[in-house]
Image 1 (cartoon, one colour):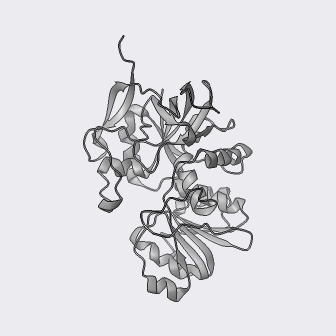
Image 2 (cartoon, one colour):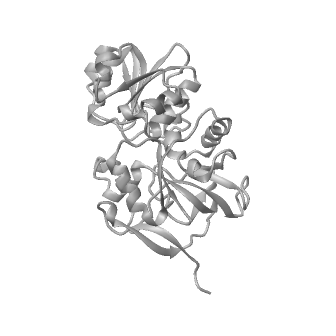
Image 3 (cartoon, one colour):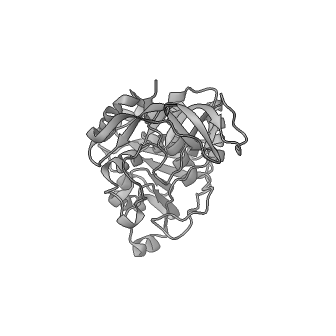
Length: 336
């Protein structure tokens, strides 16, 4: 009997978007603890292009191990078609979404079918479609684990100490840098859900969008340097991070905290002198947390913005869109 096949995107080499190949590959079989999902939509995330480029932006000691060829992708929304004998809580026909096996890079979500760990999945919110659900997992869980609840004890590869979210309430001011992007627009909404005052930093084209999400103040970084006008913030979530993140230290009050999503270089003497904390974590798959996010999505407390969609076969165009930047919300692949 011939092995059933499916369409998928694979990498046989590292490089630009042109190395993403649309191919026929065998349909996976679910192993212990897994379900087979017919994928309807796939969220596109920075780790997808890190993998495509060969992880050149990460220190060698932090790079996950993987073999080529590889199917990229971690975020999906779809329908369960088969369940391993040891799995409870999911049945064929259930609509689910999830962040698969992260921080490893074997989610294999750029495909028509995926064998997914049941623990990484949650029931898809009934009030949103597959495209919007696929935009949630990595970005939403990153915001959740930085701001609300870490939910795991795994150390970050970038710091020895365990990350601790800052309790947020009406007395706290939170600055979100890169507020219009995937993580940023979720972080803004979660901080508002907790009652905090939120300052959103993005380019001017996103001002109306971010005000609609609840931003109390907007700063167009192309016209104003936020570190020159913001003072006494309790928390900065810098979704851009990297080497320029330390400029936000001067926006914090003593006792405040800077959370860079992509870690940079910081001077311990400077942070001690300023009386502030720098902390980060690495997002990890968590179906239970995703279910809590799902309830907020169903209630309309949090919503997902979609920047653009592309068919799976045209994943190259999705990566080219990502490379142009100034993304509003999420880029999603649709799987016919």
